[in-house]
Length: 432
Ligand code: UDX
Image (tube, rainbow, N blue to C red; front, side):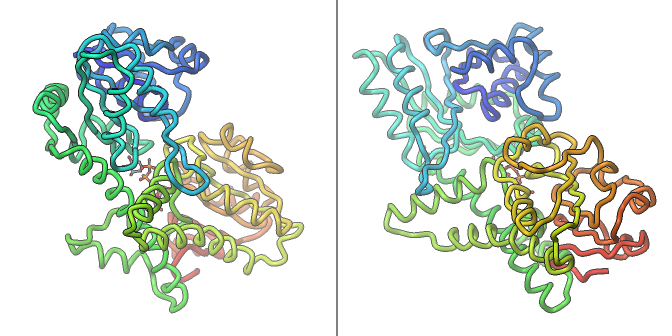
């Protein structure tokens, strides 16, 4: 099938490339000429494992194209995915102005049937709104249809999430739209759920909010564990073995970040309030998460006070491992709090340093973990990069000035770190 992708950011690029990989002919559009130039030159504007090679292969196979102009794709594609940003407004609601602009632009150029699919996370009822906007802008008599097909991609494993999803959700109002989307995904083995458009939109809100709720639950629990000297990892293991609960997304730590959870939670809470049925638990999930960064910072401050004149060696800055994404990264909340108390920061991240620089000032960025920890009074681990598991702790200890280790991701076992000579603190587990 001929597919158009509008918005070549994270979601658009992964979706477009994977659809090309499935054999479709895909053209990705972005109104940022610099981004399109970068993509055409074979580079990817962000780090996602496997994406670069996949783009290269599909471009070489003549199935993946990049353009800046929506009018170039509108009448050549039978399906157009809207994958533009839906950033948060100050009141937490989703800003749909990019969706509005591209919808109008599609409508203006449309001359023959096309299915317009919302892929970006959008508030419930956006599908209806896209339909109305298209109706107002298309030439009289030009047929079109609208659908919702939310993405569930995790950064760092987006390609696998796309190629082998737990489910494909298709929200449609007509049999024609259902048939097209079934055909599009025909080669995929995953269960495909067909719903009305509003339900599909709500599945995305509900899934992200529920996952975030699990994380905040674990973080709330971690504070109770700290208070009584219990081990949150054991508690969540014991809970999670009940299949009704499940053990995923129950890892306590410094809190969730990224482009989706914080933004989507606020938007969903805002929608529920506007509908007059406030979903209060979501507000609490946000509050627990915001407080978790401060909670972890205070652990460090209380042990090391005064922080003035102390150097902290920071391992990891990105909001999670396997990405260079700094959006809503817990490090952005934690490090300024520590700097305010007078701490000097030396930080290393395998991928995110360039994206961290504009946001985290006054930091010495290191080329490797040993450099970041050299001369530091304490180790502060904020992202669970696998490469930290194989650090040579003897070498680290030789460079360190102190023995403190604050692990914000519960990456190591307290007993093991004690053996390496550290005074080890983590989240919701007894120290060693
Ligand atoms: C998320 C959803 O998982 C994905 O389905 C959706 O499409 C987009 O949002 P992503 O933001 O890439 O994906 O990251 P994810 O792996 O879900 O992690 C989100 C945050 O939660 C990270 O900061 C991570 O460190 C944190 N997290 C995750 C925890 O703190 N504990 C956990 O147990 C799991």
